[in-house]
Image (cartoon, rainbow over all chains, first blue to last red; front, side, top):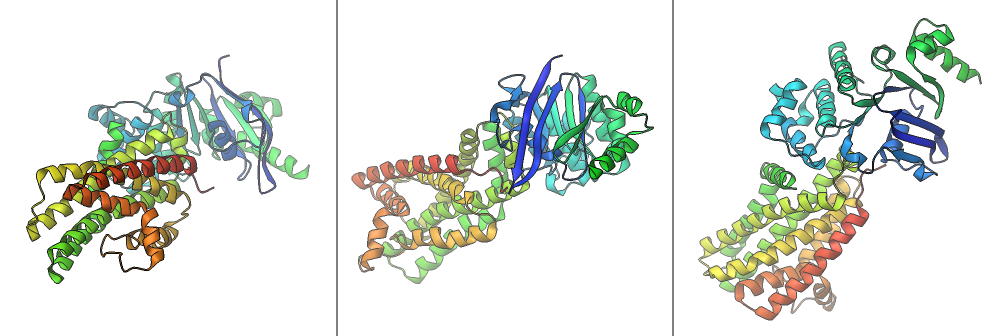
Length: 238
Length: 238
């Protein structure tokens, strides 16, 4: 299988507290990978290390990317959905296009706004949009340069059911267009519906990994939530 | 780069701080002080002093406060995962701000020339341009450097009092320094703002050796500030 990112033995500590410990992960082309785990498990730190935003404590060269210019083919949505202050949704899209080295015409920007149901608020300051609209705009930003891999950090956190469904549909569409996705989430229903591989992180380590259906079958549980709780409780005892 | 410059210009025009610090304050200051002490020598000193103040205030206020806001929102974290190099980003955004700073300083000059009927030649006004451009870019780069060690707007205001104000008052922008304490006269000799003021006056009065000396020093300040700004740029507060 075509590997996009391969990281080996990633570790990260903050002030002596280990957040991620010897974590190895591989993302292949065509996959939709969900990182799940309790708050503080190390999901965001893992994604940040994969992105190069946070340096790993050691083995800095242990992350391998599928191409040298991978940044030009990688879409990223951070948990904080950052936008340039003072700029409208439309202008933010224009700016991020420029940062990715892509020239978009006004019409193309409007098409993106339409696709992500943001056309009516295109002239509104990005920071004044609702949380749902900001998340959609952040996901729209990830697609501006036709990436091969998209990394989403809790894309549906704080959204209402309709907005969650919209984001879910977007992730599914990415997959249909041969774009690989890795996302972190607390919403196991969403993970079940979208992901074809889950990576369960707890206390900075991968404790479970595999295809959701196969995992349920293997552990003979009815749903992901039951499996999740089972592992949390087992980890708590150990 | 063009898109970044274009959008920076567009956003800068909507900025109320720009109107106050770079247009209203210097123009009102020039006219008010000019009428209060109606000596032509003093009016010319005040006009050139205010013109330089307009540039430094715009460079500092815009760059430092914008950088702090963008960094806190996580925009610069996202910048790390785009293919655009940091130096290219700093140069693009600084060019946009430089155009605005130059337009503001010419507006201050024009207002002073019209109100007090100062007959600077067209050649002198054109000679001024390289000095203004070099100073504006240099101070914007310097402000990128300063914003690196300002965690919030409060600290930025404090740094303003510690660095920018002494730069203004340890120069002969508003009053001659012949009778100032020896230490102030010494500081003025190593004060980059003094060389900006000297350059502006040399350009308008046609004093060629002073003009060239100022250009050389402003170029040196520009490269030093660019080096410092790129080396110390902070993508996030974490």
